[in-house]
Amino acid sequence: MNKSAIIFLNGGFPEDRILKEYVKKSDVIIAADGGGNFLREKNILPHYVSGDLDSLTRDNYEFYKEKKVRIKKIREQETTDFEKCINFCLKNSFNEAFVLGASGQRPDHTLNNFSVMKRYYKKLKIIFVSEEFEIFFVNKIIEFNYPPEETVSILAMPVAKKIFTSGLKYKLNGETLEFGVREGALNVSVSKKVSISFKSGNLLLFKKHFIK
Image (cartoon, rainbow, N blue to C red):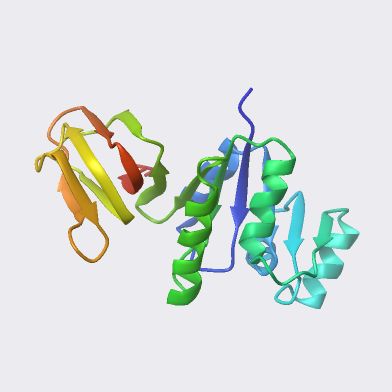
C-alpha cells in the first residue's frame, strides 16, 4: 500500500494550483518548522509540525496547538528540520514524500536540501516540486510517459557512470556524467516515452509535472 506525505519547508513555493494538486495526492501534511507559517497563510492545516521550532512564530504555534495539530519539537541540532521530517516519514512507513519549498531562499539551504535527499532517496522516494518540475534521484532505471519536445534534465551528483537513454534528442550510450565536468541538462524529449538507466553513482532527474 502506497503511503504519501507532503513536506513544506521554508523556501520558495510554486503557485497555489500546483501545491493544491500535491496536497490532494498526499495522505499526511507535514510542516517543517517555518513551513508552518506559510501553511497558515494558505489556510492549509497540517497534520504535523516538526523541527526545532526556531522559525515558527509564537502566534502560529498557539494556533496549531489550539487546532490539535501534532507539534513535534526536536531540539538536537545534528540534523536539519527537513531531515527530521524525513526520519519521521521513515519511522512511520511512508513510501514517498513530496517536498515543497526546498529551494529559492538561500543557496546554502537549497544545496543542503539536495544533499539530504541524496542521503535518503534509496530508503524513501523523495520528490522536490518546483513551479515546473518534479526533481528526484533515479534509482538505477526509470521509464515514463512524456510529451515530445519538452525539457528533461539529468545531473550527476557527483558522478553517474554508464548512462543509457532513449526518447531524448541528445542520447547517452554508456557515457559518464560528472558534476563540474559534464552535465545532461536541457535535453529534449522526442517520443512519448523516455527511459534512463545507469550502472553506478547518483543521478538527479528534472521532469515537468504539467499541472495547469
